[in-house]
Image 1 (cartoon, rainbow, N blue to C red):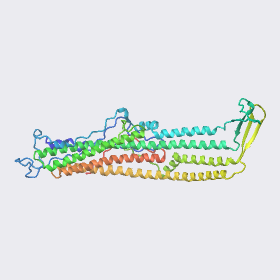
Image 2 (cartoon, one colour; image 1 turned 45 degrees about the vertical axis):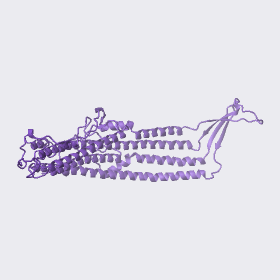
Image 3 (cartoon, rainbow, N blue to C red; image 1 turned 180 degrees about the vertical axis):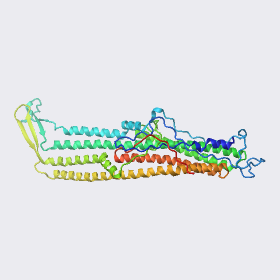
Image 4 (tube, helix red, strand yellow; image 1 turned 45 degrees about the horizontal axis):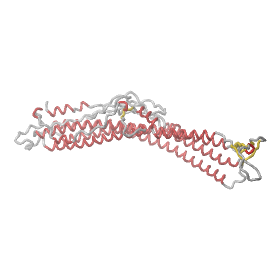
Length: 503
């Protein structure tokens, strides 16, 4: 078989691999949980790049100085037997295959559910929120307890003498009963603060879950694009080798070999960038998991397209106003400040003090109340009331921000879904069709090697763009989950789909 025919067979478009599977939509599942796994656990297959065209050698112009004295071959003929083909020049290997990311043990290849479980245990934002809840709980227990009884020592005599600590009659015990209502108000304030800290912890978990899901999707996209770049690099390397051999045999001009070598170097640069992106995505996922950036980690689930069924916009807003913990946290903060108003006003009312001498005798009863307010109590009450008004405004603003989050997430999801459709229905199949036609035209002498290189790059960019669109779509779904405060994603059985090739 001629050399160019072998190259065509090796990279024929018929070997195209289906893009990430499309998951059919189902009914929404509004439960506050993580995004379901896409494709289930297991090793992550390297996403195969789409087929690349296979240029056949074109005949060099008459008088080509590649082989002095050799007869000019017929246009687009492949009459040179494989044994007579000269080895590639050292220039072809100048762009060596870049080093790939280190292999990750199977135990460190995580599903999304496993990543979320690890983050719930190790993420420092969640750890901090849980400790704040524990702190607020301890404060509530302390504020709910009554005031401690006190022991008073007093020695009365008319002469200077050392204190007699052994005389029990010098001791009195007192207990304060907060008849002003301070005890109840302090407990109510601490209880509201505890509730607010719990809602803040829920907010932290929602934020971490979104961060984990986004980092996981970014790693899936990086893995898919790396697989695409590796396949493109291999195809361009074969093209560079073929054009170099053609030039050596006088079957093509040297400009073809130079162009192919330049394309190979450029693709090596693209491959290095893809490797860097994978390593960066792994480090970002590790940080979200609460681990060291250099720890081994990878996504066990391949990139997939999981369409979602989204309720009407008004229903999304209603769910968000019910579910978002930020709104409940703001309401709890308002309750704590309202208790603070009563706590400051309670200073106008007396507390009761009961006391008795340890030596025996009757029980003393007293009241503790300010004789006159010189302005400190009135000022504290006024400040507490203003703090409540400030919090009411902040609570209203929080509700507006939640509605804005839903609006933005809904718009982002719609745009991302359209972008995926543009790639599936137009960009991807048309770029593949262009690649096939340029390949056929090159084999017939109607296209140049530059046309082939440009078509390869167009299809490479289209495929990388498609992967990025899938990642953006999944991140838009995660954004909507976060905005609503519940899971709106639904998944079904993966069904592979191949975009049709435009004739």
